[in-house]
Length: 72
Image (cartoon, rainbow, N blue to C red; front, side, top):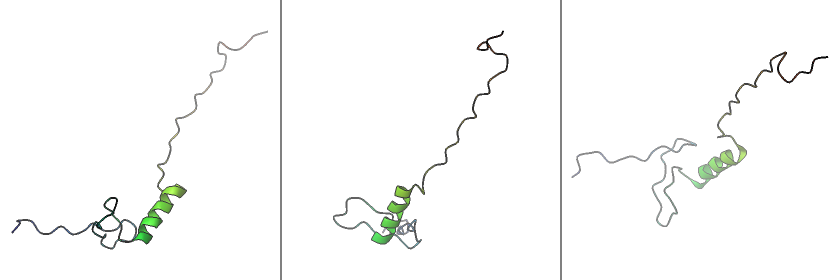
């Protein structure tokens, strides 16, 4: 008998129910409990809901009286 308790499946990231175990013949293990939750997650990726926020660097400030000015 193993010394550790049986591992419970992780919760589905969409609805929180226990994720389904790996199905025979499945392409890869799935963290989702159903095809519906898998499709909801795919839709979120495709619409950009999971996009990382982009922090743009501040624009450089041009100095007055710089070398590029022509005097008259």
